[in-house]
Image (cartoon, rainbow, N blue to C red; front, side, top):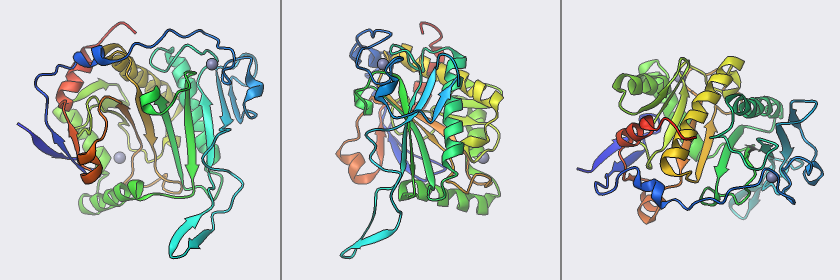
Length: 333
Ligand SMILES: [Zn+2]
Ligand SMILES: [Zn+2]
């Protein structure tokens, strides 16, 4: 029976219309096999030895000797750092110069690896780079929002095979981000608690959508998941900003993230995916009503006319089923 479900935090609705004829393991057969990659690819600007082909690194880990992680300004950035944020009018329409900071996080010196198969401490080094850059970029007083994300594969928006993620910092907080923030304020006013903390405890209490549960983090397919296998990782303690994550928490998150991505990779045949870290806007790092999290969206379904028209997503795999399937995947990374 189809069902409407509401996301408690954003108030968005989804339709759950499970396709009974389709079992989760069928998704893996539908994935195109990826060609095996070489560990070094000539002409790849992100490979070790080709450092001169990128802008100068703003962060390198380790700082000396062979690097694992390098963060470089994005050569092909949609936004530029040397512009003003003054709004202008085009007739009655509002515009501004394309100011922003765009960086590429080269996650590994090797061409043929990815987060889902890296060693846990290597993943922690990548997350450590995110945290460090987030921390530094927020010093720019024109920046209001920092979005850290990873596109894996062509359906997720990248044709570059070398493992990398991106950071884009903008002066603008768009309605897509602003609206959930306002909802979180209202929830706090009404209940005196963080809506995300409440959601996390309810997911843990119900239990059937949990993928991985560690001391300080929990990964689950949310009650109102918009697409098959949509997964989220939340810190259990209240933290509005990703920069408040401790070193130990970064290591633990690395384990949880690799676990979830490893399960998606092995269980679903290495699907393309996006992940995003949603963290509080700059200046809201200590608020009681916001809570950072990671959302991982395998590119299994594509938003079509109804989704575009209504903003209501139709999910054909119940998150309970997605989570049960992912929990079962234990080996083969
Ligand atoms: Zn490469
Ligand atoms: Zn919270």
